[in-house]
Image 1: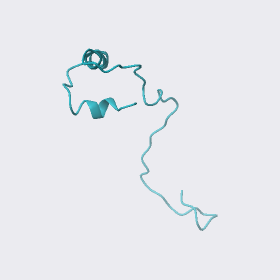
Image 2: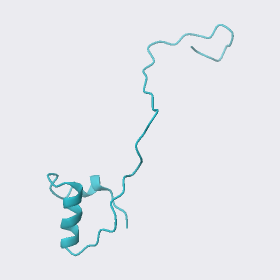
Image 3: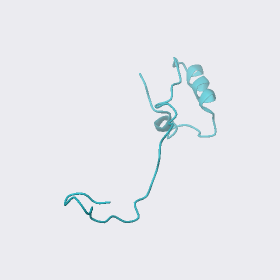
Image 4: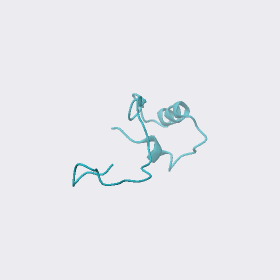
Length: 64
């Protein structure tokens, strides 16, 4: 069964590292098979804020 570390941390001490938490769970009698990130690292992501938008001069349904 896969569970979210974030959900689990609502019930246990957040001062533990991920590995320490996995060890404590194993010592409590539950086996931790693997620790996997939800998503890989992002690369090439661009974040922007649109400050203004005006009608496109050559198209009725577009804004620039």
